[in-house]
Length: 286
Image: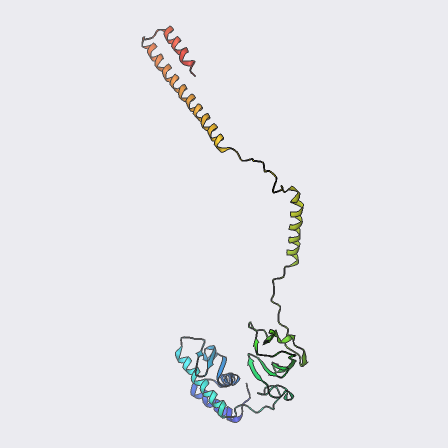
């Protein structure tokens, strides 16, 4: 738990009793408000709905976004803690230039042009120097001829910092280190480079394409027409079908007439000679 002065401990105990919260929860919110300079806080307190944000005179967000009662509690609590921090020595005085102090950078750097913090990283900008604190470890960088306009932390949980200058956006890790361990190198997330397998496949495809190029026909050479003449073929098929149909129709007619001739001979209308002569005439049609 964060160390407190006796005055600070008494104030925290009183706030915890009135808000019906644990002392640990109040201390967590007190540290969050202090890190935000008394005007804002980012917190993750299970007793107050988990993760949330508070801004003095502005926005209050809690995990249960539709719980207005919880929002009012967080807003009132943070405002009261901000007033306590402004009017009381809540935390023990830490000598300047040591980790945990509000003036955590080396004293020989003087007063910074600007300073700030994001998550667990603090930074301060000086003439030709940039001081960065990560987990209590301070690194001082040489800013060369950069005119630093702002420092920002990368998203996604990594610890890399960038700053803007007259040359655009620059990674802090690219600056020379005056003293300190330095920040971890940013993780390489550029996966656009082709793999060796892809290059081999591409080379194989190019070789195959070149090997088959001898079989390619020149663009200006005449192309043989192998497309069938569907109109002629259809006409031939129709003629064949018509002949077949006519032949079938003629055969059917002759058979029907032969049957009638047989009936006429049986009835005595035709003689055998007449029947045979007519039959030969009909059969010649098939």
